[in-house]
Every structure is written in structure tokens, then in C-alpha cells.
Length: 215
Ligand SMILES: CCCCCCCC/C=C\CCCCCCCC(=O)N[C@@H](COP(=O)(O)O)[C@H](O)/C=C/CCCCCCCCCCCCC
Image (cartoon, rainbow, N blue to C red; front, side, top):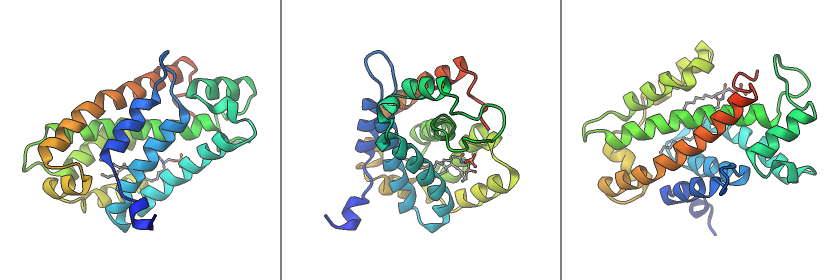
């Protein structure tokens, strides 16, 4: 398969992976979680090099988690719940300051988890926006309500500048490649509750273990 085909973004694929994320007893499968982010990064890459620094960070974090999924302790990384238990039971997480485990699964996933909140807020704005709604404003508002509080000034500034070059709503929907805007909006309406539930389950788990502020 040609490279360009491999990189083609599919909103349906995002929808499908987040649907597969939760087990019957509401555990989050790490593999599907990572696959969902991989698909989203394809979309980000299609927006151009201005988003390269964001894509790079997301890819780095995905790679860290993939290394655990493929590593010698892979059976401990099947779900986010098993990962949390394994890493905590074995003292593999820097809990208060950065130390021996700067790339623990728990802290790496937390960064993506926070970004998932941004995604949920952004997609909800996109879904409910009018034809003349500005994606840059939707994106910035969603960011300021979520991820921004975890980023230093320089990252906030760079992110804010990148948002300014986001395409207009109509073009954004074209890049989404999910049919006419009404069809894409309907798909977002189906995908959002799934994303939201994955977020909530992870949030509760991390709160129960006091992991929401990992350095
Ligand atoms: C349904 C499809 C439509 C929308 C598709 C959106 C696609 C978005 C794809 C990926 C989003 C990127 C996720 C970024 C994860 C950032 C994790 C993070 O917070 N990292 C920071 C902290 O890490 P550590 O230093 O503690 O290891 C790191 O400092 C971040 C650096 C990069 C800046 C991150 C800004 C994130 C802005 C939100 C994404 C905007 C994308 C806009 C595209 C519409």
C-alpha cells in the first residue's frame, strides 16, 4: 500500500477504535486507546507542518506506550487499569517529582488523557457550531478550558499561534473526509459519548489512585 493511502485519516476509524476501548466491565484497552490517538495524529499531520511540534509530542507519547504494549511485561499493559496496578505495585511511577521513571505508562497516558478532554470539548463545539463558526476559536476555547492549565507559557503561546492557521469550518469538514458536514456532524454525535466515557472512566481511575498530577 502506498504511503499516502496508509496515512489517510478516517473519522470512522476514530469512532471504531474508541468504541472498542471499553471492555464489558469498563476497563480501558490500552491498545485501542493508542490506536485512536494514532488515527487522530494522521489528521493533525494533514493540517500541515505548523502542527508538527504537537504531532511530534503525541507520537513520542504513543511510542512510549507502544513499547510497553510490545515489551516483556506486555500482559500487565492490556488495560489502563492493569497498567496502573502493575506500575504502582512495583514502584514504577514518579509520584511527586521527576526521578527514575520519567516515562512511566501512568504519566505518559495522563498527558494523552488530558488531551482527550481537549478533544471532547473541541469536537462538541465543532458539532454544535454554526456554518460561520471559527475552528480556531473553538480549538483555543477548548484548549484554554483543559490542556492549557497544564502547559507552561511558551507551549501555550506556540499552541495559540498554531490554532490561528486552522482552516475554516467548511474546509475543516472536508479534511475530516466524512462526507458532507451534516454527515460528519452526525458521526461526531455518535463518537462523542464514546470518547467522553473513556475519558470519565480514566479520570475516575486516576483520581482514585491520586494520579491526576503526576510530574
Ligand atoms: C475527529 C477529528 C477532529 C479533530 C482531530 C484533532 C487531532 C488532534 C490530534 C492530536 C492532538 C495532539 C495531542 C497532544 C498531546 C499533548 C500532550 C501534552 O500535553 N504534552 C505536553 C506535556 O508533556 P510533557 O512535557 O509533560 O511530557 C508537551 O509539553 C506538549 C507539547 C506540545 C503542545 C501540545 C498542545 C496541544 C494542543 C491541542 C491539540 C491541537 C490540535 C489542533 C488540531 C485541530
